[in-house]
Length: 294
Ligand SMILES: Nc1ncnc2c1ncn2[C@@H]1O[C@H](COP(=O)(O)OP(=O)(O)OP(=O)(O)O)[C@@H](O)[C@H]1O
Image (cartoon, rainbow, N blue to C red; front, side, top):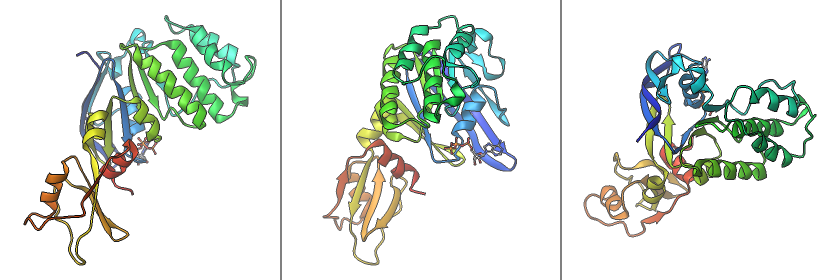
C-alpha cells in the first residue's frame, strides 16, 4: 500500500514540556484518518510539523513521499490544508479569492467552489471579512474542494459551523473520500462527525499515542461494562481494563475484551459477577472510555 503520510519517531517539546516522544504513524492512500485527543494533546502541533511549519526536536515526516522540510511546489499543490478553519486574505470578495487561488492549482474546479457558495446565502461581491465565522469556514472549505487535492489535511474543519452545515460538509467529505484515491487526515472535537467519516482513528494522550486502530475495530470490540460489588470491595486492576470508576454506586469499566474475559479479570477467584452488563458504545463514548473524562 502506498503511504501518503509517514511520521517517523517525532519527539517534540515546547521548552521543558514534552508533547510526544517517538510518535510514529502512517496514513495509507485512500484512507480517512481522524486524529482525536483532548485539548492540548498536540493535534495542531503535529499538523504544523507535518507541513514543515514547526521543527520537532527529532524525527521526520514525509508527505506524498517528500520530506516535510523540502516539499516541492508541485507536491504542495497536491495538498489541501485547512488550519483551524481560517481563510487567508479575508480582504478579498468571494469572486476575488476564487480567481486568486485558481492561479496556484493546476486541477482547479471553479464550479465546485461556486456550487458550495450558492448554498451559503452570500453574494459573489461580498467581502470575506464581512462574513460570520461559520461562513468564512465554508469559504475556506469551498476553496479546498475546488483545489481537488490528493491529500486533504483539516485541522478542526467544523469550527464555527452550525449542525446543518457540519452535516453538509461531512457529506461532501464522504463523496470526496469515495473517489478512492484521495486521502484525508483530520481533527475535530465533534466526534459524531468523525464517526460518520473516518476509517482509522489515532487517539493522542498527553505525551504519547494512546491507540491507532481501524474505527470499526473500536466500535465492534470496545465496550463499557457496569457491575456492582459488595461495599468496600474494589475491582482488580488490569491492563485490559480502561478507566474503571464508581459512578452513583455502580462500577464502570471499559475493555476490548469480551464479557467472559472481563468477568474473569474482575473476579479472579471464580466468585461470579451476576449483574455484569455490557454496553455498545458510540465513538464519543469510546473516546471517553479510552481517555477518561478529565
Ligand atoms: N508555540 C507554543 N509555545 C508553547 N507551547 C505551545 C505552543 N503551541 C502549543 N503549545 C502547547 O502545546 C500543547 C499542544 O498544543 P496543540 O495546539 O498542538 O494542542 P491541540 O491538541 O491541537 O489542542 P486543542 O484540542 O485545544 O486545539 C498545549 O499544551 C499548548 O498549550
